[in-house]
Length: 135
Image (cartoon, rainbow, N blue to C red; front, top):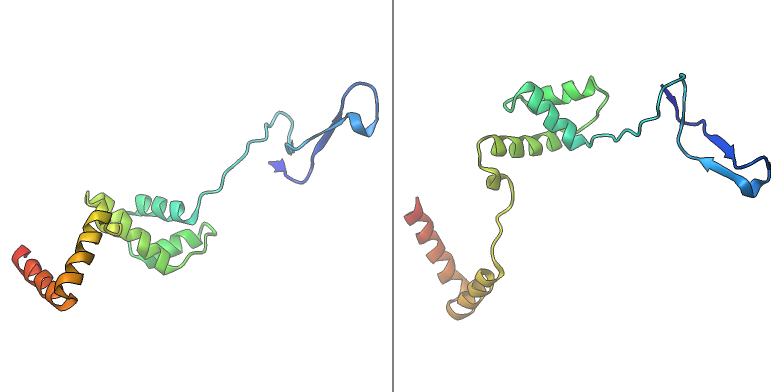
């Protein structure tokens, strides 16, 4: 175990002059021979994805929340549900369904021009017709 509050000061040469001191900011190992290792904490999202990986993508959010609570990770059901959608979309090979649609700027400007020429009601009706034809 590493004592994170204890630091060591080394002095350069034989002088005890404060200008010659070098403060080492690495924690001192609490047991001999142990090397201090920097650990990076995982984000809540990463822990939720890991829980879905361990328990399966169809696991209910409440079960994931209990699983994480046992590991001292507090999270909301809303966040778990949001990540579940992305996990399931990626598992089904349809990662785009989890992300908002991206529309090129040229298409948006063209749509704006159509609305200006024909009115929003006419464009809305045309879109409904196109949607019916597509399904």
